[in-house]
Image 1: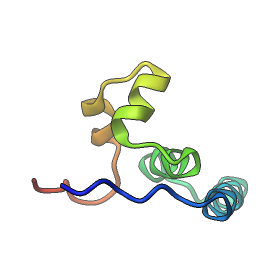
Image 2 (image 1 turned 90 degrees about the vertical axis):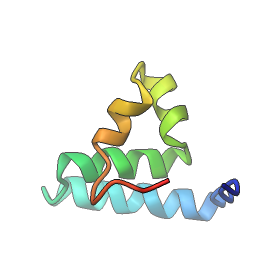
Image 3 (image 1 turned 90 degrees about the horizontal axis):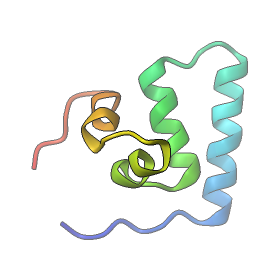
Image 4 (image 1 turned 45 degrees about the horizontal axis):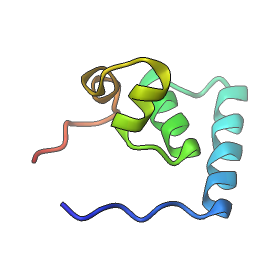
Amino acid sequence: MPRRKPPSRMDLVEARHSLLRAAEGGDLPWAEGVWAMRRCFGMTQAEFGRTFGLTTRQVSHWRPGPPTRR
């Protein structure tokens, strides 16, 4: 599988603003919040899990939408 392109600084800033707006508006389901935080930090599921003391399986369980097939 090809490596993903790292997000630009502006992409990360916009993702943080979007997360803040959704959280302030009370329109942020748990799974989408976890995904949005990963996106804000520009992390993979594995990186996010290591940083916050979770397994990749736990992080992938919170992923919104259907599971990704490999």
